Amino acid sequence: MDQTRPLSDLSSLGQGDPARISPAPVLAVVQSRFRLAVPQDEAPAVWQEGLGGLFDWLGIDAELVPAERPRRLPRLGEWALGPVPGAPVFAPWIGWSPVAFQHGGLASLPQAQFVASYLVDHARSAGPGQSGVDCVLMSPHPATCSTDEAGGVPLPRAGVLKAMIRTAHAEGRERLAIILSARQRNAVAAMLLAAGKGLTREGPAIEILTIEEALTPLTAARAPWDAIIAMPDLRGTVFTLLARASGVRGGWPMLWLSGEGALRLVTCEAAGEGMSRLPLDAQALIHALALALNSGGAGRVAWRLHHDWARLRDSGVTTAARGGNDAPYEKIAGDAEFLAMLRQGAAVSKRPQASWRALDDASVAISGTQTPSLRIVS
Image (cartoon, rainbow, N blue to C red; front, side, top):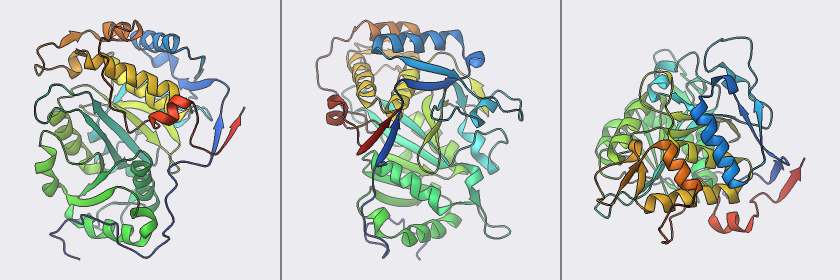
């Protein structure tokens, strides 16, 4: 295979099962109350107050249960290894750096099959390249990558790669880039060929790029993809370039997922080294909660939360982590003030707002119906 040319379209590759990929499970278990596992002793008061205020405003009868704490690894993030069954751990005040995934990953990384961080922001002005951003950055967990031979480069397991592509497909992403090293390209392309048309035919258009080939589009005002899979050692580079191009200086909501796409943990991804405790970031909290609500079957409430956030942003209100000088009408609010304005319905914009691909389709969310065809309510 030519190693100098990106594999730009895999829709016609392979001879596998042509069946369409199911974008969601056909069976959902829904609790009578929305449940989150929260490490209460680790949660800063301002984050707890912000979360509680959003629950009250949304009218959610939330059940916050203590996250299980295993006996080993007595570190700040050890609770991430033992979530309560059926309740993901919710801790967006914890920031994980993308560089923590390099060289096999830090020993204290939470367990998961892959991670997905969401870069989403409203249009900052009417200028070129400022039309808003909606992108998901995924990576296989370093623990799921292995080498076939001595001196080889780590590669994700085929099942993990398929799970990430299915996630992009389920969210309706249209263009997916897989960014890796030149030595990984042929092996990853072979995995996709072996997966067959069932994985690639009706999903997003896929490009396989080396990091050198991806640098120019990543530094543009807006990357040409709405989904990116970056190998763990390259995640820090891709994250930094996307953050710089978008102007988003705050944390991104970060999901830690099992191979079946089940949500285990919600944190944020932020620049730095290893794990850190983040100051209150109102917009990261809003987005992280919307993702958790959507995953927990409360798609209608998640849609409302994001929609009202978008209207407030469209009214010119933002926070320092996402502010800029792009719009003369922009108001920089404190994070606690931003949350208060959201709850008070301070948005003046009446324009239709763009949906967020990470959430259920608006027509599904508004009607209150769910994608699974069978629901078990306990």
